[in-house]
Image 1 (cartoon, rainbow, N blue to C red):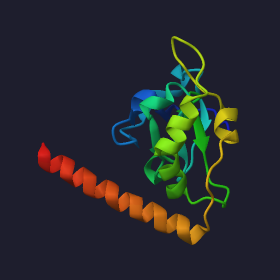
Image 2: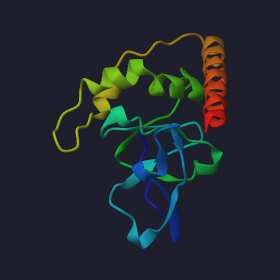
Image 3: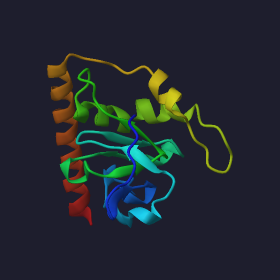
Amino acid sequence: MESRKPSGTHFKYIDIDSIDNKHQAIKEAKIIETAKAPSRASRAVFDGSILFSLVRPYLKNIALVDSSNADSIASTGFYIATSNGTFRPKYIYILMISAYVVEGLNHFMKGDNSPSINKDDIEKWLYPVPPLAEQDRIADSVQNYLSILEDIEKSLS
């Protein structure tokens, strides 16, 4: 994970409130005056980064950063996963929202008031690493099914 200090007069900030945990997506980054930046505003994000909340991971405050939010700064309450070339960003996202990862990492939670995990818990977890072409196929297939489910959900509303 890379640190980044807010600069300019205003900056885009992503905190837990910025995440739609029902759809695992960024609702909207907040625009904050740099002079009023919270001390937790220091995580650099990039196009394709995945945000994973370290606090109460079972709430699934997880999101894939797209180009519209790549210039944002995230809260230190997130683990930021950015591909090093071994994983495709969309595949990492599918992994991170999966029950395998979320429920697995929940076992490491500590604390009563705001149970949380730490970055070592995420980094030491075992992740399946198929070839890149298979990662693309898996991510596309899961995304297709998620879109179908979203359409069904909308039709029931």
